[in-house]
Image (cartoon, rainbow, N blue to C red; front, side):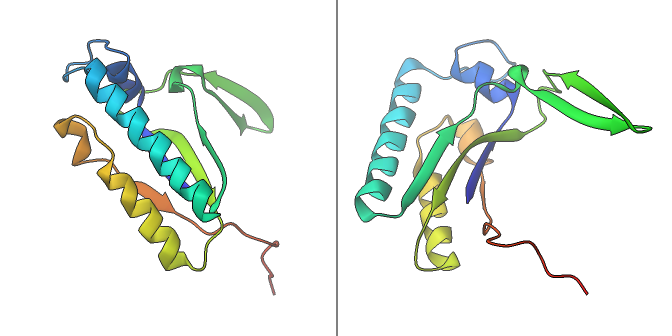
Length: 134
């Protein structure tokens, strides 16, 4: 699984809102969408894409926890700089190294300079069975 991250501030900047950092231009958003479309198409054509999804703004998040045995719900938004999962790709490929190569391609995604240097993705294997203890 390849995981990408963003903050509410990132989502706001992409929609043109003032965040204290330069907002994305329409051309920058279009370039990102074009890149992602081609990136996903390449994975589909190679037979490596199982599923991919982008997630809506963190402001629409609900975090569910437990305190003293009682459940509680916290609605977003969270701190503007708190990063949350922004999207994911599930790929089926020959190795963990190949999944890492695929994720590295995301570094070529067009973005404003103040974001391009801090963007990252995680690659994590999906557990096929529960762990064995004992």
